[in-house]
Length: 288
Figure 1 (cartoon, rainbow, N blue to C red):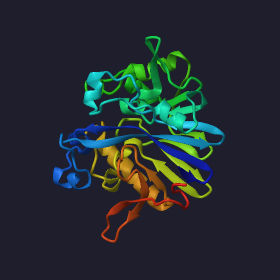
Figure 2: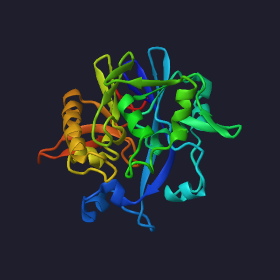
Figure 3: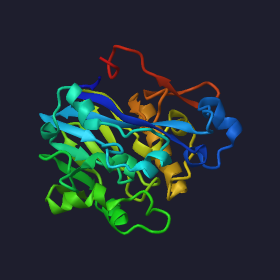
Figure 4: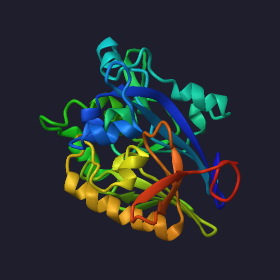
């Protein structure tokens, strides 16, 4: 668990998937990325699907819901896994029932970030968290509902359309406070309206990058953008903004998909480069 002032943050990994590095690293040369993320025997690299259990202002908030359990054999093969994750089970182990969640925030609606929004019940997809309001940017929802040839293989209506039918969907129009010290802030690039989560409490700060930077190395290097980004030049400018912010605020940075350095602080090195230094147990803004 991490603490940012009075805010409690528990990262919960839904599952680990294995993906083609051509997607994860785009045009970055293999000789560079393989030093920090060696591929396995299949030539694939790992990505953790990190969700956040957040307690702030008396609210129980869930950021992201992973892939969910609606995957067929083809989808399991695509993601390089043998079985889907079990986010409800992982939450239950932390003493949190699905009915306890007040707000679910989807940073965007790609399947690996919102697949667990719904589960199949009596033959149809129904909200996994029955008492929660689900938050997503209005523009992101529009892009998900009307995908194009490039995006239609990651936006699946069963992950979000049922929320509108049950009245549990809240569409955001730009930057929005979620609870005291917790804000959704649009960080354009990966999609047109992806949002990062910003934490600020009692003089301490944190940032959940989502797919602004999948890995720590993506946050360190502006030019390292994924092939998944629909607006890669916008990603670079969004990362530039949040690099400066993280340095200025000594923020705890929690990465969306990083399996090895899931959280750390951005540091400026003497050679002018930046490095995400992993946090150590104990201390302000670090694991409790």
